[in-house]
Length: 255
Image (cartoon, rainbow, N blue to C red; front, side, top):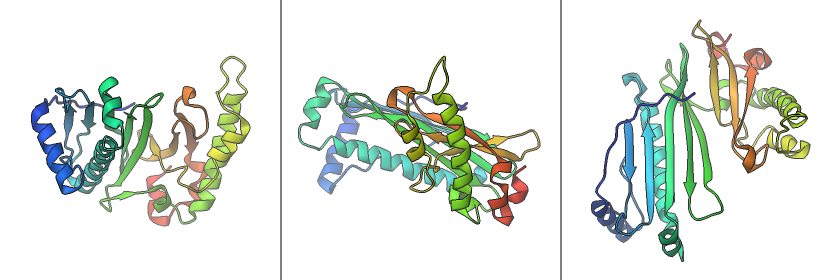
């Protein structure tokens, strides 16, 4: 689903190590801003601590606020990852099994009004398995700003209640699949789809040839509505399920 534009960039390990040491003296790492293309940071090829792989989207010139929001997000992810190396015993564990931060960020959908960008990544910091990183950004081309799910609706709670009804229907159906049942239970589905607490924060657009949004796909990371082995789950909600709750200025963008 994700469109990828990859430009390889090799970064010298020794230089990165020096930068990280300098950051430590200032009180914390300060990674460089993200940009279009791909970076592969194998910091500490000499220390064998970690790798970073970052893939960034190509965006139109008018979407600079979106680019800036993504850059800030990537810097925060990198900073948190690097900071985790300073916890007691972390470097010793990382030398045994190198840590890894992977962020694949790409344009996933576009309509007349919106650009939607998806983040699909993971961070391995010595646990039993990598921690998934699942996020999204939706940019309003008309107002030139990033919008959250609540920004689209006059009554966000009513809209999320409509999302929950459809999400539960689909997930419970998958739970009862005789051939390949979803690795979950009704209680986890009920809790993971309840309105509030940012449960519908990550979404993509269902678009049609008319350039309008025909629905929203909500993406639930592992553990929210199913076990880790089930992976992330996606639920398509048609626009007629929530159209009544849209703000007037967005109604023409949906069908």
